[in-house]
Image (cartoon, rainbow over all chains, first blue to last red; front, side, top):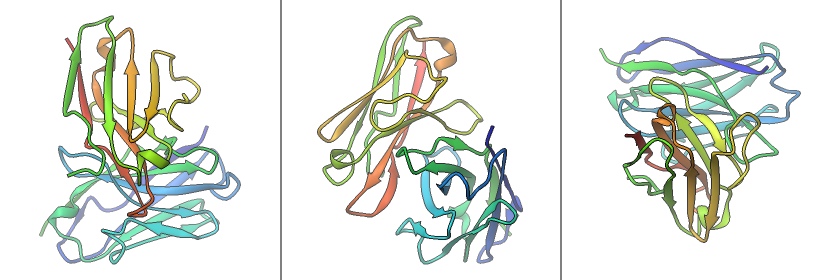
Length: 120
Length: 110
């Protein structure tokens, strides 16, 4: 059964770069022909889509974060990653990675999430 | 302020039925598929409904989805205390060209 697991620093200083990785197990990130996405949830608030990447590398990002976001994929490691530059306290959130299959219009498998706090 | 509007909270008694609405526009719900997610306290969201009204395997038929015009509705019958959670709708916005979620609805089973 496919599983996703986020990893990365739980604390990032303001104006630095947030970097997270999502490791995919139980299946190949390239064989499932899916998109892979990042979604975040600030404390006590709702879900916010960050962006998606296709296994071959094509990306699309939230317009509100596009200038600061890069999502990349490493098929050899069966991972995809998120980089968010120039972070502020407003970027403090639980960050989730998730699968977005081509055949349905939804995120069907989610990681457990990782808490990232922006603070000096 | 979310692009999709959901009621902040709904409540009902065990065994009863509840509906949660999600209101949008022609650029999102009106012309794209809607999905629904359940988020139990302290856990990741879980897909309940995709493509407006389809259930992934393992999701009981107590959960249903529908769409009409620029609004979508999640229905839950036979409410259980274990259904207490936050529920989110989601879709694609063709105008803004981003995936959007509703602000979430907290379900309380009294």
